[in-house]
Image (cartoon, rainbow, N blue to C red; front, side, top):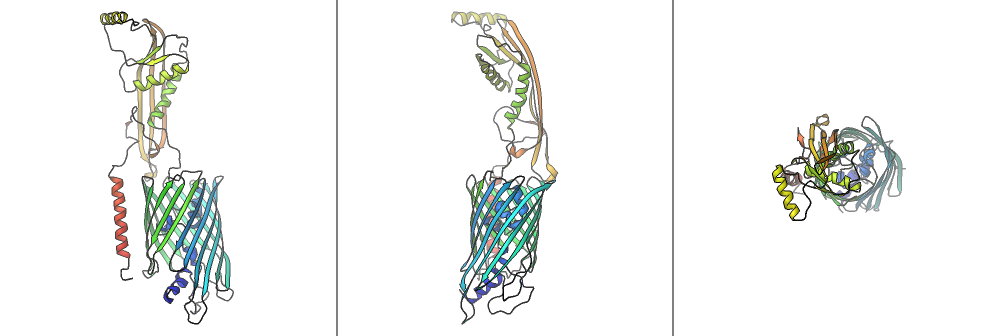
Length: 512
């Protein structure tokens, strides 16, 4: 490797003066391997992870975000940049009570090198071990802390120290959060024969926002030494299998060794297993990062909360209550098959008839659902009975018939709204059932009853209501099953890919 590249390694990657350079005094900033990030997911977002990192990544970018991890996650990643520079990361987060605990190990190694003629080549290695904890506080606010032990070896000298990370995360509404983090705060660290170097302390403020399957993180970061910059990252999940990521830093020095933009993708190989990759261009060489995340005891698809009741199941709850009320004293000593039918044609008729038949069979009765009986005159009925008699069949009304009148059957969306204007769409819904029953046999009424029930459910996330075919279909102010136009998702994907290509060819230094 040429001398200029090793100077770059020493000054940019390692954060220390190159060999043979003059000492710069006690304000030198070092240990920049702490700013190299963690897994490829956040790297693919150009490091914008203050508000959207999760699991093991959260231990690096904002420990407060571990509080929402749930279950257990183990993550590992590998990173290479320039010749002989290698970095690895291994982290784990475990849910603990209302919060979570995390542990991570980060290492950076540089092969032996030298840029001064006549001096022996030396090697470099850095290690950071972090232990963190997070828990919810109140009103949607989470807090987290992480303590890191640091050790660096250069030639035959070593330096040890510690650093502290702290973070806050306010869950404004589902999918939207405000976050703040203090990273790498601690005392200056120096080698035995060298000057103390300030840590690359960062103060970051971020906003995470969700628009359907698109996740956005925008943040502002102040770093001890370089000053302040901004960052924006986008992550889009296509059919919950493939994640496309892109991001860029804003306000950074154009002469930096790393280009401000980054891109990457993630693949959900199977439930609980995700494979990630990120790419970032550089003045000399690009950097590649690969990683794997294992999730245990939680749904890694981003749909951790349980699904709400489908329209059919929600309606069934109201129907069951009405039947419980109506059929308390139903005679259970009937020997013949009970014919169950509605008194008139209704969309809910087949649904109600099949459920009533289920109940009767559970009680040990023979039951069969039939279509509503057509209106017949007495003369037509006599002719029909005569025809049945000639065929050796019983007359029409010889079997006990359980008929029900559908006085009211309704599934309704009462209101559709968004929490705090930006949250996911939620609905209020109701289901009402009112039935009147008559049991008759051979023209004689044996039993009558009625049942009525209304169920109301408020603030249900519309995206978590699974569809159900058939009856009932929602009526009212809107439908919970509204889906995007089938061309929207492909258009978004094409737009993201096109944007990545434009960013790449706009920012890449062709001469280099």
